Amino acid sequence: MENIITSKDNSAIKLYRKLADSKKERYELGKFVLEGARLVGDAVNEGAELSHLLITESTTDKYENILSQVDLKKVRVIIISNELGIKISSTEKTQGIFAICDMPKKLSLSKFLNSGGRYIILHKLQDPGNVGMIIRTADAVGVNGVVLCESCDIFSPKVVRSTMGSIFRMPICWDMDIDDVLSVMDKQGIETLAAVVDSDAYDIKNYSFSKNCAVLIGNEGSGLDSDVIQKCNTPITIKMNGNINSLNAAMAAGIIMWELMK
Amino acid sequence: MENIITSKDNSAIKLYRKLADSKKERYELGKFVLEGARLVGDAVNEGAELSHLLITESTTDKYENILSQVDLKKVRVIIISNELGIKISSTEKTQGIFAICDMPKKLSLSKFLNSGGRYIILHKLQDPGNVGMIIRTADAVGVNGVVLCESCDIFSPKVVRSTMGSIFRMPICWDMDIDDVLSVMDKQGIETLAAVVDSDAYDIKNYSFSKNCAVLIGNEGSGLDSDVIQKCNTPITIKMNGNINSLNAAMAAGIIMWELMK
Image (cartoon, rainbow over all chains, first blue to last red; front, side, top):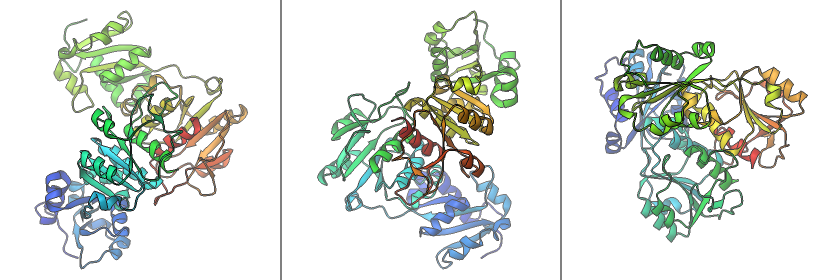
């Protein structure tokens, strides 16, 4: 424990803010930030590597439980003033607890796929809320892993927050090239399924998903690129009973994952 | 068409802003606001009653198609300066098209349920994005109607936007009392199903939904109140295969509606 930090020029505070704001900084330093009791608690419970834990002076008693679980030889615990907590918070009403966390080691895709199973591949997903919700849902329904290609940064505060802790539990392979992913999948005999809006594609209601397969989900506005669809083994679709032919991308992914895993 | 409006003190601009900001104003005047080409276009296509259409000076050519469809005897078309467009916009990059729309007439619940079918009832849903996404998904999968009890205002700009036009297509009954709803459902012989996180509840994978039924979805954080669960006919649940026992409320509702309607 240290004295209460009040200055925004403190090195840990500066680091926190840089990591919160800049993808470049996150990847250069291999770290990202967490905010809130649930997220920091999940990180500690799941054994994520924290380097700093920042707690506001008025909440130290409240977070005794989290504090008692961290290894003080590895984690630097810093008490900050309430004003500073409000300053670095990205929420309207801060809970007064923040952490800096090491990114997990990125696995090679072949290793990632070693155990077999059913995967989700996101290509050009741009909305952090959608990506977070898909990772959370993948965790809930038991998908074996999520692969991100040209999508928004999974270590951005918004994505991390909307995973609700699933970022620490799900096997995730990020920053991948879609062609590389498709060719590794092909080599490993994993069926690739392109989620499309096309009445000629296979209806997910009746499709028998193989034990080793991966579903590709495309951009919110424009869906999957046509050349990506071409390279996949099978086009699948959600047949609509209603009046519109498009669901929100995260909802479509959620319904497909539900059918995939049930 | 009129001269270009540049002043934020113009009566239509003042009305637009009041309606965007205040639920009280919306309900007193029976009007709400729309922003963006897709939403305004959907409103026009679905025959919603517009009273004002506001278009920025630089986009009038772009929206000729929408302009040609509105009845100029009923809709007051106002050209506003680009600066004013930026000022009244709730998005970072405005598309320069806005409308003021009359709320549809609210039906009595008994009339609303007349045709029978399958319904979703939202109780104490607080997140506008969740409510909008549920209405959009209900439309896509063919749910017969949505009932809102003590939930956030469906005519707030955020909910309206996240319905992606489904607010004009879906039968919606808002601002209802949950006890009244349950008793009308009971009287009309509609089975009420409480969506809960409870391993003893019926698994939606195997449940045979009756032709006339309604699923109740509760608050994002705390779920349905226990007295509401008690008053429902049947508890249903999404059995999880994964590591967490909770999905985002909109995702849970989406998966349940998918099973309900397929």
